[in-house]
Image 1 (cartoon, protein in one colour):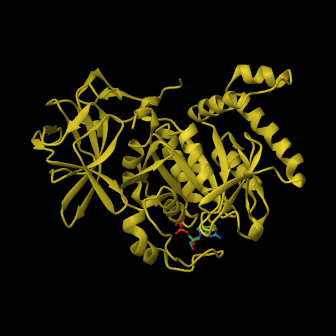
Image 2: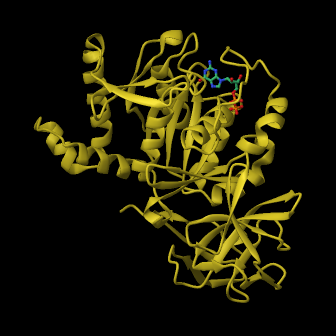
Image 3: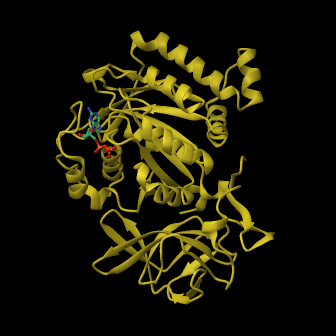
Length: 405
Ligand code: GDP
């Protein structure tokens, strides 16, 4: 799949907002797992101890990186630990993301961990969408959560959808671009159907669409002019502007209930449509050993390979090193230099992880996230085709930039 259709994203959340449930639904709707686990919940609090839940589902859900496919796009989901005490690990995983989905609870809204993770994401310039989950809960209030995003995180947040039905009657969403309702059919909400906007929601949908367009117009002079002269604004213009807004730091907000199987597929559509690909990311920095030397990594498969190990996992078959390829291409059987130890190591096996299954692959190129088996690495190590290239960990990412195209 082309690089333009690759998304490297993290799902970040305050504990209990539903990150695990959402990740699981993503695996389900993308066909990676074939049934939704019977997990108690859907109440106002966790009905199962969180650690127990992690133990039961953890292997499937919180693997360091999992590859799924959605409508012609490859989405690599990278685990971003949400706990404050794992800050180093969080930062390491943030370095390999191109974008994120911030999950919030419709009742709790922006909570302490959201603030910490948001600060880290800002440092790394990570564009994002927000997903207000648990729309089925008593007291769900997406408007309040959007306000919290603005007040507590200083985010340019605006709704892309409004809810149909409230609390336990939450049924789906109105899409403010398409101006249609998305409802779900099937026991697991697997079928998304499009319906006209319910008559009693029309005024609100028009009003919120106006707010959305106004917020977006800050990112497009053309759209601003059209809005002021009350001309029609095409869908294409809204798509392009939303993309620019996301790259410019805005936070479009989506709604759903992962537990009740609602709103997840439209969120995936938005990931494909608006979040940046590895092509949008350029990595620049200063070589810590040589102040004069600027290092620039380009998502180009034909340049010399540079990659970074961001997570090491011991498993029954040996050590798995999760790695992002920043530049160039790795080939099975070739050797590359660990920049910390100076040793050349053979990448004898390269795998792509699909929740529990792994796919053996022959090569991987810039922008991709894969695992290498049997190399002697530590988390944070840089590998490169060249000897004495640089250690990325120390140079990263003071001025990594997202290219605004
Ligand atoms: P995490 O800590 O963010 O990974 O959250 P989990 O996915 O483990 O969810 C925490 C609790 O909230 C569990 O009991 C879930 O069943 C429940 N939950 C998750 N999503 C929803 C939702 O959309 N609605 C409701 N009512 N409960 C949910």
